[in-house]
Image (cartoon, rainbow, N blue to C red; front, side, top):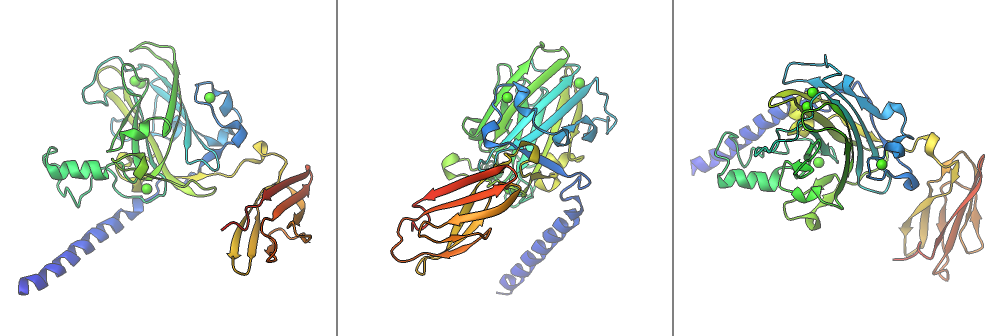
Length: 377
Ligand SMILES: [Ca+2]
Ligand SMILES: [Ca+2]
Ligand SMILES: [Ca+2]
Ligand SMILES: [Ca+2]
């Protein structure tokens, strides 16, 4: 069985060579490192309403707004020298701590809004295209070369269909958003999970006052849910990306500008059109903490972790907002602490503790109590 002993070696070599190829690509990973891309954190009581009234975005500082000057038409010849009369856009991205959603405000001026035709190919309208990789897994996300090594193969082949339905859009999602949609869906999802374009996985509103072929300004307000795993089977089997403060996500957008039967630009933020199908080419955006300008002056909040249930030891973590000068913990058993992050041992008899943190600072005092929950198994 000499052949059998050789085969694993050739597989190893193949794996090595593909690994080396990946390494050679590494220089492209996380492009646009010169810019600290940021996602604005909205307070819970000021989440954007999807209605194209942009007043809910007025609290967002200008440093979060990404305009035309950052784009590069890498395919149709404009490069970074973009005529603002031809296309001028602003993109702002937001999130709310505790929700796995990305909010977008897209404001665009175009000299020729192209949307009145029926296009069987699906992407010959003006399009705002976004790609999200919520956990920065990176990698190809449209073609799986293990299933379809040669992309030119028959697209109706079972292997190709299997590759597309099981793989495309699964670990990073591509949305071709029609600007505006007329007699049409609002988005073409490039992958096997069109359900991500339905409420409550996304939501969208448009505002514009122009006809096909005219110039004008369009406002698009929407949110999407990023997924680490977005399978064809639907949301029940999906895994949302867990958005956490200070984490980075992969994100880029591109604008396909059709100005009357021809594409007149594929402007993209990544400066590399590979971004549409390969997550290594997505810039990194940071999920920002709340800006001091929108924070409450003082707000008590805390969390906890049971260190040892048998010994009833619990570690408490202060998560309060504001300039705090003192912390006062009441463990509900007659004992207190002035530490910021205390560890407390509860007695056997204390089954349902009522625990309060009171913080004091420039803004006065604020309290947060948790009833009965800390020693729940
Ligand atoms: Ca709004
Ligand atoms: Ca144009
Ligand atoms: Ca991913
Ligand atoms: Ca156009």
